[in-house]
Image (cartoon, rainbow, N blue to C red; front, side, top):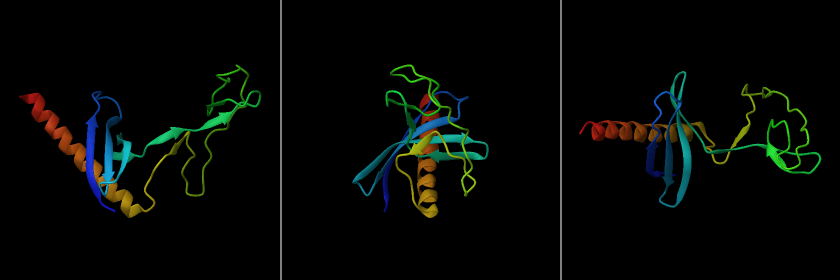
Length: 132
């Protein structure tokens, strides 16, 4: 599978960790939007598009965001959800779940390199464009 296009939209806030959003096209036939470029403690990395996990209200069944205190539908108290647990791999479970993600480490590295290269090009183009 080849990445045939990477589009990057820079975010304006220099003090925030979120630096950009990327849209990646695979084999000119499949698109993944909202890949985030994030500044971490050891440099830039990408985060795949995700959605917040939900929990059902025991009273009315309405799906509320995980760790909500009260139901957004009926205002009933929701049961407390414990802190994220450590998994066998050592990763903590999150309030978000990836919608799409690479299966192999080698493809993740390939995807990250292409997105971060496009991010650096867009950043350089933005600096050149704002200097004129």
